[in-house]
Length: 428
Image (cartoon, rainbow, N blue to C red):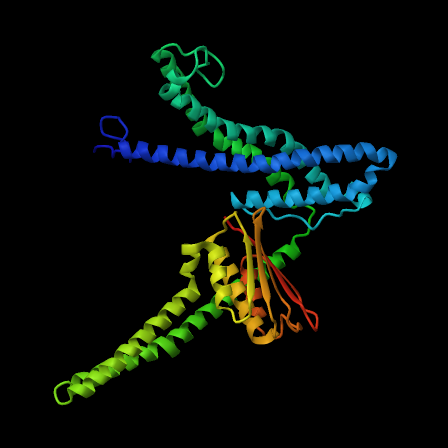
């Protein structure tokens, strides 16, 4: 009985072209993702180097007492940078559960295990992580330079080196072709080594920035459980809203269209004028049903987000708000579509609440992105007194934000002003 041929292998011992192509595509995709991770890690590595130098200067000057004044600032910078690295690594792999907030008081920080682990990560990321990040930035540049060298070498002045390593001088087409072969070598190095370099760069963060074995994660587990429950509740509420909109609005309109069309069909022979009137009413009902369907679709995921982006979508909301509203969006870092949709709905619900309940004369929406976070500030000069538990629409906003593991802060003293601060992970 003949032995079956393995997938991707021909009977003559060769390998099928689709198998080779799929392998190359996977390797190229992994290399591109690894380079993105390495360059992203280069940004935090540069900040880690600055914080490390700052910490060293603070430690030395603390011997004469001056550095003690800077120590709390250094500790806050360290904890903030460690949190940013956790977010970055979480976007490229499993989420890193951080420990409880580390202290910024010098005496407590000296004996705090979390601070010690973050300092160890800082030293490694500012050295090895920085070198790997520089390698991830330079390797594609070197590969591009040498691969394209045969296309422009004759434009260079005499005596110019033919390779990015500064070796050789291009005098003939053979010299230029040799430089192009070196570019292929750089490409092979990228395909073969960049995934391992990315893992090596991320390893200290995944080990040292995660919660230690002595950390109590019960609060975090409880928080995630509550977040999951809020996400499910928000999803169920959204499904009920869509069902009500379709049942009470669109479905009734379509029933009306059906009835009118049936009546018009029966009347068309004996009363053409009456049938024509019924057809006009049916057409009007169909147009209203179509408008309501579009409204329901926009409520699920507004197409304006894809067409105009978050800034354009929020500008449209402000234009339709009865209260004059100023929009200030500076968000060069794009977020996941679900996160931008959540931000859109949060602003829409907040502006609706302002128009209905606040008595405000003006409102403002400020949006910023950076460090893997999207931040929204929504303010108005109304009467204040908003309550998250008061059924004013803020409960729905809170549930939407909790579904993304975001945060919400509300300040609304009696007499105003009201400020709503929302922070969401970008989720890329």
